[in-house]
Image (cartoon, rainbow, N blue to C red; front, side, top):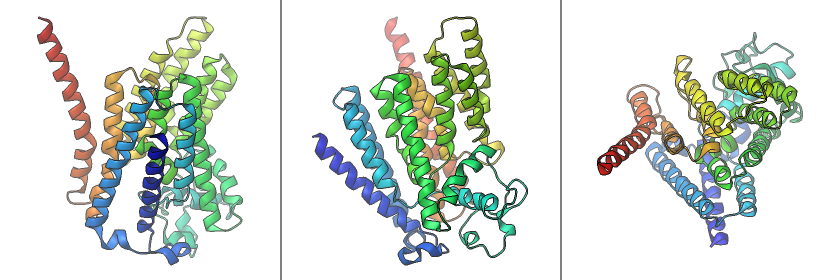
Length: 377
């Protein structure tokens, strides 16, 4: 059963990885030999394929979590599935759904090749640079905190001027942090279900192992700082928490919780870590809902609250709400994939697919609560 399931999962991931290359940008000269234009000339069929893939992804996810709950999947099985997931998706096309990884590369180039300040100089100012042909948002200064830019330096420099090697270096960097976060969640929770909930969540897999978003780095450093607080290693905990903020500023919202933990440690009081992770997830939800102030809600922002929510899997409302978001957010890509525009019905459909699954979950819990009250009378 396990071997058959792993084989099926491997085939599925391989097909999804192949499908990702139908989105290769026509201006990406480095991959011109495999450019097909399929996703852009067959939008309806591409959208159907994508929706089907997402549903199958969640079916596998549900099976894995259910088997983990039933204790039919062990730590060894998790390692095999992790190896399969990372190994296959490492070679997927990263700009299938987002061009952010190209922005990471071009921003690194501004600093480490042109020796200019990316917070002052925009990539588009280097007229003729071949990366500009397919990089979106090249008309912006660096959007991320300084540590992320310096961290990407090794990936860029070790690319030795080769775009493909540089791209793979960036994916390797993100994959390493994904794997490190998985094991950190295991160290914190000692709960195989929490690990499966995080590791094989389709949104987390797609937004990290395929799209290569840096949110996983921020999340890892924040979680690591909490883990060090559990071990009462305050200095290094504070250091890593600051580093998390210096990757992406969102974890600044966790400062109240972090200070509360420090106060508890100094006063030598007991700490309810489940409550800590619960409120940390809620604070990350605040950042998630405030994100439209800058631009819009992006699917990868869900990593902020998912990482903490899965540490308290017994909080059913939080868990199911988070799962509903991770499901709905992956369908935010559908209207642009189908229509090829961010105008018209696209914003309405994006909002609908994001919040309808969550509203259904909330409706279920409300009805369940009312029924329990009626039945108890």
